[in-house]
Length: 278
Ligand code: ADP
Ligand code: MG
Image 1 (spheres, helix red, strand yellow):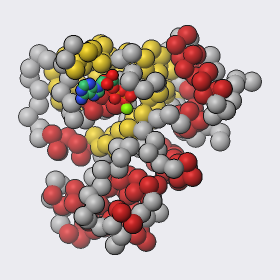
Image 2 (cartoon, protein in one colour; image 1 turned 180 degrees about the vertical axis):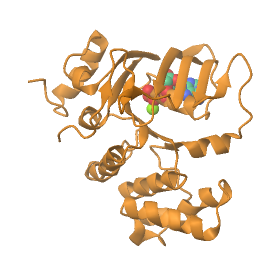
Image 3 (cartoon, protein in one colour; image 1 turned 30 degrees about the vertical axis):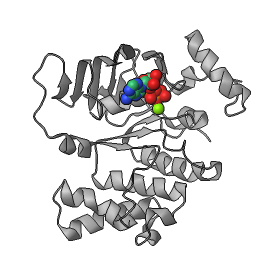
Image 4 (cartoon, helix red, strand yellow; image 1 turned 90 degrees about the horizontal axis):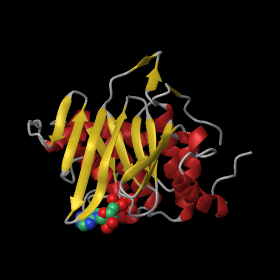
């Protein structure tokens, strides 16, 4: 695989699009999350600009899922600031927005490791329920959106199937289609291929690669190092609840600055998942 999405960054890791720095779609500032006395996220700041594909890598327990869950307000942060465009979604200084959280989640969607499909509904119903109930689209519009995105992920032939009749890879493609029907500004993925049998990983990564090429803004937690290297415009390495390194993948994967990044990546080098720098 060669580089999928070409991207330009300035020296401060600001994403440059059409010659300028575009305003961020997500802003995270000094984010802290405690579970009891356990500080899981420890003062974490970053921004995501439209068009960026940010892969988040790091050991199990480093706080990757908690970070995505805080952005999506599935967890309430302990401290810090989370903004969607100009709108404050969480602030410890009060003044958070009154936007209903389910409306916010149509703009900042999430795809989970375990799919989270409704097992009692068909594929088509799973892909219509959000646009019908949350976005209040009429039946025809909702159906058209479902078919558009099910076609995109190659699952249109399965509209009448129930999730139990599908393979893991097919379920995850339906879950991605369902997230896309809301036409979000950003899609968050939490290890979307980790629950899949190895032979099904490729079909899901392929869908995500296409979305990246089309310019969808994504934040992807993944252990697929070759995917992160080839598809992300920027890779974040998390370690112990902190961003230990944040760089373009061309540098992060070949000349990591932080010894912790080097140590983490060497495990994947040893397992043959990524090649050593030439
Ligand atoms: P990652 O996704 O990088 O594996 P997580 O964000 O899931 O890491 O977890 C980071 C740390 O937070 C872990 O030590 C985990 O046990 C802890 N943690 C996560 N969720 C909860 C929770 N709901 N209650 C208590 N501890 C939690
Ligand atoms: Mg996780």
